[in-house]
Amino acid sequence: MKKLYVNPLPIRIWHWTNAAGFVLLMLTGLQIRYLDQVQLVSFKTAVVAHNWVGFVLIADYFLWLGFYLFTGTIKVYAPELSPAKYLRQLRYYGYGIFRGDHDPHQVSIDHKFNPLQGMTYLMVMAVIVPVQFFTGLLLWDIARFSSMVEMFGGVRIVDMVHVIFFIFLTGFFFLHPFLSSLSDTPWAHYKAMITGYEEVEDEAAPS
Image 1 (tube, helix red, strand yellow):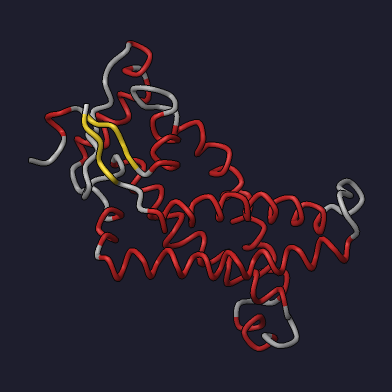
Image 2 (cartoon, rainbow, N blue to C red):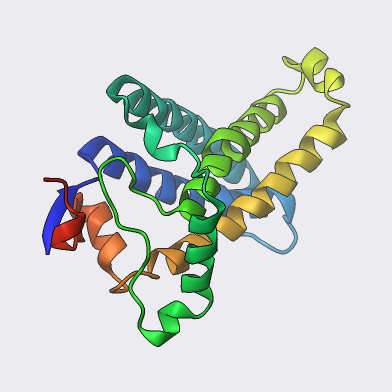
């Protein structure tokens, strides 16, 4: 086995900051939405915390984007164009992993994600997260952004989009740890996001 440095320190900091921040957004968002059922802190505290954590994660997102753009590593999010590779990965997740098969995707510096991961992360980071931040910003100060809110159909539409994308992100948040465990060893990807190094077979490492 050889080790590849696939998760630089800025990406690891972004990842864990994002994870912790989203937990706080999820909890405070649930309290704001369902005040009668969820009462972790006062309503005012939940709103203030939700807003501040949201701003921190917006800044965190642009740090993530800037790192990938300025280092040229954004290409790891380029979607795979071969349908056969998607099918191989689906077969592995569907039954190959239960037979002890090896993951068909070999991690490399330029191909950190398997085809299904890459497509999922691209949709989350390029569409769902930006829209969630944008709708959250509009709802943060409806009076200030009233003209834009009206342009998008009013408060109810903006709020509905924010809630729907919250549901998608919550589902992803719970599914992501499970999918991250679907490797040759359950803790391999977790370890890589802590140390930065991913263990690969000798022949998969670049010469």
